[in-house]
Length: 129
Image 1 (tube, rainbow, N blue to C red):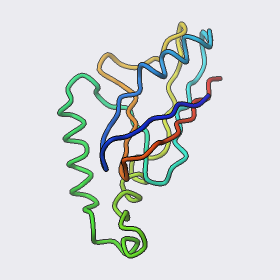
Image 2 (cartoon, one colour; image 1 turned 60 degrees about the vertical axis):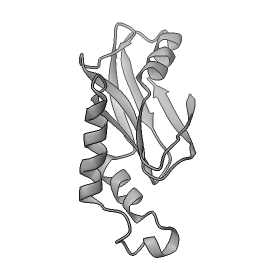
Image 3 (cartoon, rainbow, N blue to C red; image 1 turned 90 degrees about the vertical axis):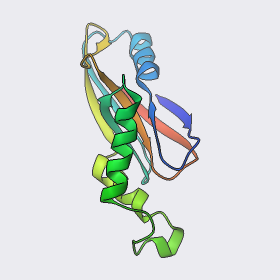
Image 4 (spheres, helix red, strand yellow; image 1 turned 180 degrees about the vertical axis):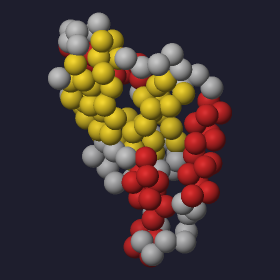
């Protein structure tokens, strides 16, 4: 399965939990695993709090401090060295258990798509087993 997402900013966090939950529901899979993966070198997937939007803002700000824009050798090619570093730190995928036909996420957890070099249209691959 695949989702497409259009981002609006160079860096943003997009909660994709509801879309993934809907795919799990449609699959009728009772128990198993849900792999969420992005085939992009400047985007990532993470699980974090999805209740308070300040968490996502803090998350992006922390990554900006770790990998600031404009100081990397790769920037000479296309100006996005920081985006590659941020994506590599977070990683391209997460695996979430499925229990009783639902994602086994904690109360405050959500699945987040992380854009580090937008705005773009991105693909998210979901594999349910």
